[in-house]
Image (cartoon, rainbow, N blue to C red; front, top):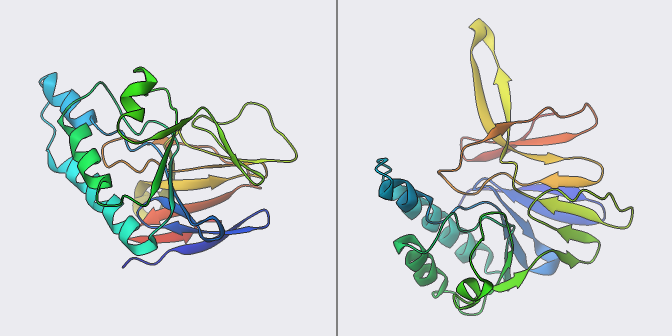
Length: 216
């Protein structure tokens, strides 16, 4: 099993996992963001060849995390789904049915555009935002900074470019932590990334070669 890295968010110890998820032991909660279930089928229906194994990889990773941590709660920070219903929705439903004791919470993202009943019928508890203790979970970064809360969000698919010798460089997904907010990397294998420009005061954790590495 891949080893996670302990991080500190305010008074809370959490664990960043190499599969780009966050584990909150004190709340028995697993957190993922931007899985984009159905994106592969959506592209294939448009005539763009995308391997079906892309979605299978997402589900394998999710199962690995659920079997390892055995959480009582699983929070998806939006864009769990990418498009309208397709076969990949059924695959996710079948996957989560293996874990009936896990309460699945979906914080709505910009890709959850169907009527809420479509998600509720799949067993998801729907929230626009979700606050647990002093942690405020949202999909997009919260535009209002509140001193009494720390915002954990997704949406941006953050990545950082690493440079080396001979002008070699590579871009890797990262967990981007500021004084008021942390942005989760995209969990999905077919999501793309966006290079960020952090300040010197921010903390970055990169996901590289099945490990989590603090970059500053």
